[in-house]
Each structure stands twice: as structure tokens, then as C-alpha cells.
Length: 368
Image (cartoon, rainbow, N blue to C red; front, top):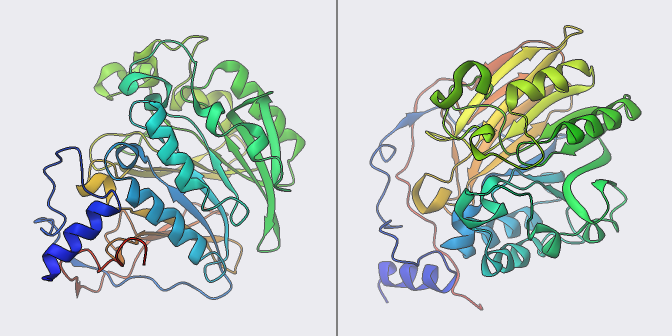
């Protein structure tokens, strides 16, 4: 059998093709096929990793095999990369439909009992394709707090039976870490709850993640100042119970707490990438990062964002990897380092190297 026929048949069996999508998985991205980029940064021995699963909505709808490929890669490399946690930043589904949640559920079950993870909902998870008014959501049918309670790292939720606002604590690299996940367009009540958790665990370095915070231009979502000039601000959706965008979250929560070192989100349009470092009230640096690959070929082609915490306890190495292509994205927006103890972002070595065309690697036939 010819390679093309084999690969197309295999991808179809894994759910990588479907629903009449026009994307040709064997056609290289014309903008990147002959691109020059820095060499991939190596994994530094002694580091540990947080893996970010950016918006998975198109995988749930069209390419469920890619989501399964992502979680399987995490499970297979949990020891080698010392993966401490996995974070999914919302829009698990595209339309909040039962069959989409079924696909997401099956993919995450690969991690159950192996690698702890935290999730938050995005606007597409609430009801039909992102348009909603209430906060009713199926996420608690598939990911109730009881699914997480067996893990010693699970701290709890704001509301019984609801996973939308959750927190986790763990130790890695000789330090204590706190992860707080916040609902889409969090209410004041959710920000107040998160503030209490941050104060209670003030000896932990804290990462806060939610679906919408930083915009594609690397500034925070700010409805009061920018309105509709920033697409898809949470305030546009009229969410029941009130909402807060990035600037409001910064002023009401993030900048007030000296233990927050990173805020992370997905959701944004354009290239789906953003990064800046802001100064909190006490003067310490807070890194703010947006990552969302859904608008790339094959809904993102399985790209993962890897946060590798280096042995010095102060440096985070950011890399982006696709297990489908078995390759790293090495442009300055996808590969860089930042310090959590000072205002410093360092781009990767800029020595140009030839990057091979983006061709999917050979996949094993389904069931082999």
C-alpha cells in the first residue's frame, strides 16, 4: 500500500479526518514548510513539567484521535519529562453536545490514575457553539469533583458538585505549588473565593488559569477601555451572574497576591499566542500567557504547550510540541524562557537552522 493511502486510512480510523473538512494532512503548511527557526531547546535534566492542552474544541468535533494522541503522549512521557500536572484551558468541546463530551471523556481517561489534571470551561462548553446566557453546563456530568477527589493533590471546588472553579496543590522541584482554575468570565464570587485560597496557601507559588484573560496583542482583555476592538471579550456574552475580563481579574485578584507568578488562558483569535510580564502591587513579576492553536491545520495538529521548570527553581522554559508531527515549534512566540523571580523573558537561540516540512509522522494502524 502506498504511504499516502496508508496514512489517510490510518488517520481516518483514528478520527483525524472527518466532517467534510478541507484540510489535507499530507499538504505542508505553505507558510512554514521552508521556514527558518531556532534549534529546539533541549529538555534540561532535573526539570519538571506542566503540560498545557490548549482549546481542544475542534478535536472533540472533527479529530477525536488527535486529543487521544495528546493524552497518550503525556501518559507515555510522564516519567521521562517528570510531568507534574496537565492543564486544559477551556473549550473542551465545540458545541457542548453529549457526543463531544463523550469523546473528551474517553481521551482524559488515559490520564486517570497516571497524571493529575485540572480543567476549566470555555464559552463553547456551555451551550451551542459559544452563544449562551446562563451558566448551565454538562461538564459536571463528565468531570464531577468526585472524579478528582482520589488524587492527593486535589484541593477542592468553590461549589459542591461543580468543577468550574477548582484548585490543586502539589510539590515539585523542592517547592510547593498551587493551581487555581476559574470559570469562563468568572463572577465576583469566584474571584473572592480564589483570593481566599491564595491567602490560605500563601507559602505556595500560584498559577491561575481561565479561558479568557490575555488577548492576542499581549494585553489583557479590557472591555471598559477597548470594548469590541478586542474580539470575544466575555462581557459580550451577557453571562448570568456577572462576569470579569482580564483587566478586572488583574485588578480584583491577581495583582493583590504576592504568590501568583503566572496567569494562563486560551480562547483568543488570530495566531492564538500572547505573552507579557506585569508588575503586581508588591512589585513582583507576574507572567501572563495565552495559547490557543485551534485555528491552525487539523484544529491544532495536537500541539501541546510545555512549561519546563528548570532545576534552578527560577526559570521556566516554554516549548510547543506536536506529537502528530513529532516536532517542536521554535519561533520566538512558541519557544522562550522567562524568570519567575524577575522581569526577564529570553528568546531561544536565534541561530537559523533548516526546519523540515510539516509532514505527519507514520502512525501505527488502529488496533495494532
